[in-house]
Length: 335
Figure 1 (cartoon, rainbow, N blue to C red):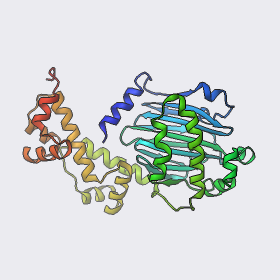
Figure 2: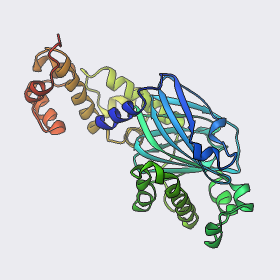
Figure 3: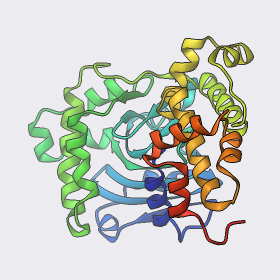
Figure 4: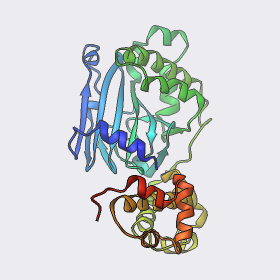
């Protein structure tokens, strides 16, 4: 629960109204061709987001994506000859795709698939936000108009088609190679972003071409499982004053305990106990800032039997005691 990241994302999108996904093409991108895969997208959300498009090479388009929303539903043409690469820089993404497949990406993870896989899909953001990069590659165009440097490496469009566009999506966990490729794109000055992007797209395609099929994979889940976990999450977070055991939840939702724990961690990025401890503390932080309720009352509201247990958990997460936190951050107008 990276609250500071969330605030930064919200600040970046403060001028965009809720319910809006703004798609912006840079002037440099407009001058490079007619590729516009992302502009074909129809999206519906109660949150907000921005997609900044750039044409990198003929048939290759990149977008810098910033989303602040609980979820976004996407629709576009089902094009199995378009390779889609999506990198999650910050936040978490749960992506329910065609065929009932669900993929969950954390910071540094990457998914590769055809545009047919995500033609009618929903992205969920368990932390409420995400920031990353998408790259769309027209494999038909790549096979006929391949950048010279890429052609010299022996990279073949047919290989991408076979390995990444003929079935379920692939999901690659964070690693030093992906960090090396993508990290500079988020820190380079604006005037150098497109030249660097050209180099990094080539580097990424070479990296993917060298991967053996299913060599590195994140576990994929059925969307029915992840929807069930979302229901469990809702019950846990709406009833903080109660404590539910894994066994109780397993019986209530008819899911075995090991699957429950595994899928919850995949969706929300942490084991249930760790996640709920942090969630309870962050709710307590809000109450400490915005109300005059006693420490004991707040402890009870967020599910702690004693003030002592609450104070220990609070310090574990924040490194300060609740009394000190309230003194430093309480709104003077709270009531």
